[in-house]
Amino acid sequence: MPAQGCIAVSTMHLAKGLEFRAVAVMACDDEVLPLQERIETISDEADLEEVYHTERHLLYVACTRARDQLLISGVDPASEFLDDLDT
Image 1: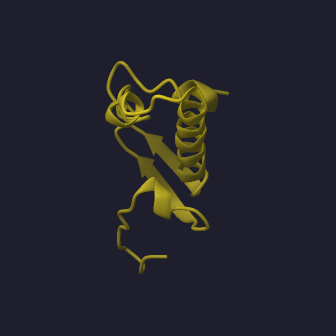
Image 2: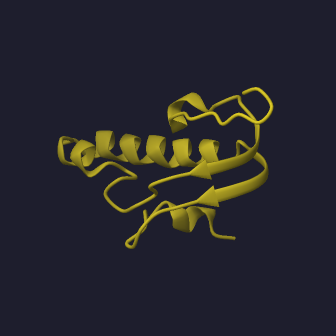
Image 3: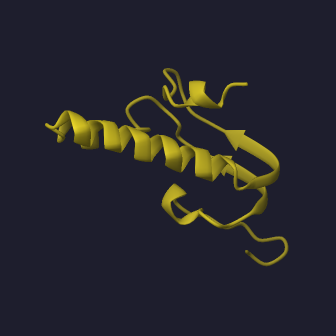
């Protein structure tokens, strides 16, 4: 947890187990989440499903680190994973 009045910058991979008063999840764009370059290198369908599952889970974990406020940003077209968060 960062000191009072400080901002912590991290990847989604490092957010697990942490909690913050406010979280901003940035660049939730199509072809960024999941990363298009990573998708293009996968030839096996099972591996592709695993990548999608992992990336979706990472987004969920990052978003649930926010105790009070959550901001998700991106440009159009947004990541398809954001539909999973819509309530």
